[in-house]
Image (tube, rainbow, N blue to C red):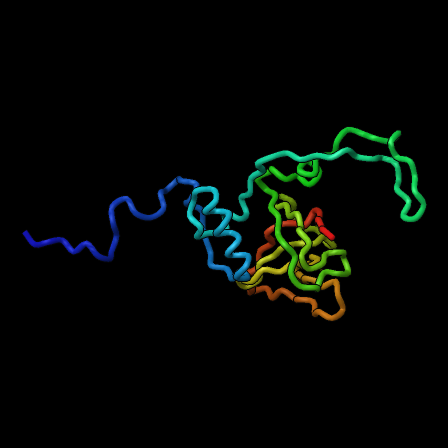
Length: 191
């Protein structure tokens, strides 16, 4: 009997299993190196493979954190006693919907959205379940590259509007590979 060649070709039991959670369609996208490295670290820390952005997008909440919420307005100048105005603690995870399978976080890079209050280093909260509407901020993938811009649709034409005059708007051609990944619902900034 001739010895079987065990290199190359199909192997029994290899590949994606039909009906498994990994059987969804995939596409190749370009990510900034630091974002791809972060996705790998997240996946490896969860005990999985570091070979997909899915690990990055399918985040999970490991703890709940809250702080007392002061309901009185705070003047930026003259001190105001606020102890009488405490409400139940505010859970930031609850406020931003973090923990929902459709919500993920992304760090803002670049300055094209400063006119809408998104600056480099900010963390944007993105909801994949929200449909894009005119004027909302979206995370989109255009021909394999990610961008964050204001979504504008007129008929069949889609424009991704930069909110800084130093950057151009992007007219999305009809033949482009274009997908909105989610709608930005909030952001966080540390000083």
